[in-house]
Figure 1 (cartoon, rainbow, N blue to C red):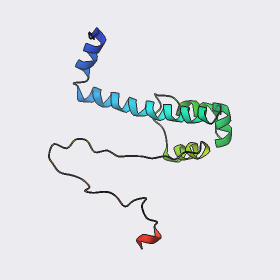
Figure 2 (cartoon, helix red, strand yellow):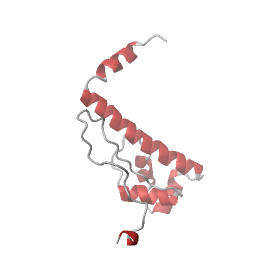
Figure 3 (spheres, rainbow, N blue to C red):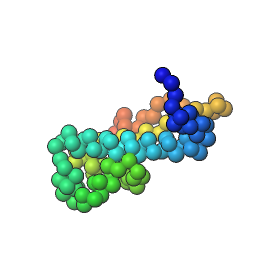
Figure 4 (cartoon, rainbow, N blue to C red):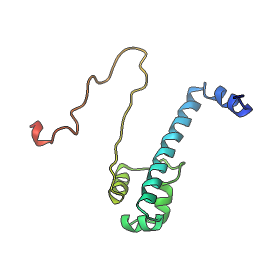
Length: 119
């Protein structure tokens, strides 16, 4: 398939690390927005109905479902998830490390045992 002028332009722009980082951040916001929207629709709720459940405004739900919004708080995402019978998972993925150094080795025990079990 032949590349369009835009494809060529985008390839050139993606060589700039700052531009590539912005595109990745936009993709993350888009992903959150799509997930919230899909869960809400699967639950058969309108934005207004979800807002009523969360005791917030329809405008706030609209913001959460906007690909350009980056003001998501973990507490609000948890409230949305609970209302939509889901859970929130935040995953930190290390960048490819060219030095061979690692911040953490092995798996984390987080979430595998209760707090009392660790005492």
